[in-house]
Image: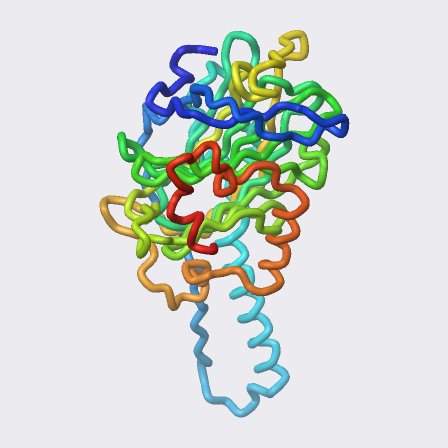
Length: 357
């Protein structure tokens, strides 16, 4: 991979995964090795600012007080008004257009926007991977994207989909999908950075084949919590624990990024399985992007009130049903939790791990 696709500042120690059971369940090996994490190419930003449009209620006034304006007519008028209002709301929250919302930032043509902006694909071959970023920056939001991952033998490849700010003390919220040999499951790797500090990895298997069809991967980010979800099922919650001295990403606007790149020095079985370039090009696909979010532009947010019903996500938390879903995923599909890795933190687990959250 091109040298530009690595960020040496993000080299960090992680606990490698090795297959140690016949059923291919992963266990952490206990080897603490420096792993170069990729740069997701934060450079060459193209300024493009616009505000998210919010639904507006249509105002209708009768042109006269004629008593022949019957109750049936009033009902029809109300139905027409309601249908226009619903149409306005759907238009404001429906899936975006990739031409409008994103820029292909690297890959020399390996990233493509297709189907009149409804589909985006990233490809990887031996010469280079590819990536894209959002035109807008956001400070809090509910971000949804449907992905279909690299099928077949994807060993050595990594697909990253995440939010990130810039600078040496950046904030970041990560989904990363680590490829594997045909028949073995993908690993979904998550992480949260605040003030340039990460080391908050949780890893999961998925309960479906993420290469067979599109699935929705969501990040809810508000001032109180970050919730990672897959097909509306929460898999991880990271709460704001600033009262305990734990930094929380809340002051830096972030763009959406994604990239597909060669990570065969660490991604599959700790780098033991290399990328099979005879299978290239590797391709991941994206569709149905939606951002119900606060756009950050010129030092101001597009969100002016949390009382607006369209901004209800700013106060959203997990209800009892979703708390049960979260427990189900973590019991059955979580394969690594940094808060349980006492070997990695011999001086004591991070503060948030002892908070009971």
